[in-house]
Length: 267
Image 1 (cartoon, helix red, strand yellow):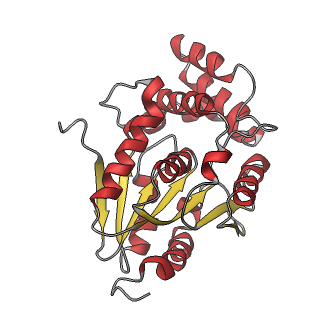
Image 2 (cartoon, one colour; image 1 turned 180 degrees about the vertical axis):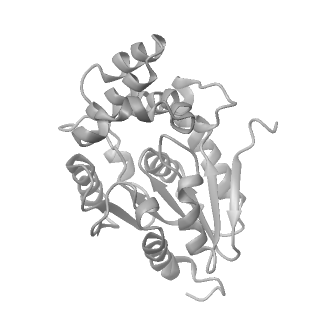
């Protein structure tokens, strides 16, 4: 396997493995404080999703499959089952990996996946083409604004500042990949029946302050899976990994311990 094709990971700690699949508009860095909080008890492996590796061209028709393949590659490389944690669009990748092969996983934490539902599509009609047209015209801030307002459904003040945010290089570089991410999720379609067959326990997390559609999607997913529990995060929104990293890390460890033990291997 070439260096380009090999999964890119960052590791902290020692012990039983927890695999983290980050969300959109960035890479694994926003999860580092959560990983540090867990690293005294677990070996935390953060994968940089292939879609957000800017040095690799995107194959939109294969974007989901490529990311699922790299997650399974990493998980199968452990010599024992791991707990997988997926956030936002990364939670959809985690669900797809679990549905493809639950064998490498003892359980999963699924944090607000933007799962398309029959009665609740992800995003307004035409969002993808309009955001893509804005990118093609060089209007990166406008593309981000369209996504935040019509897909993420952020508060009005948040989407209003999107053009200014997109002037920041750390944000601007990821906007085209976020639109790729969005379009790949829309292509995926409704997959609740597949997720219901996942053969391990799940905690589906939802933030009390998140946009309502994320809470609705999380609740529907939890109700569909026979071994899933819906866990509300009081006072948190969609990015508790940044606003409450210690608290989120402790919650993940609480889920993991009965499934894979702690750093000393005790269940």
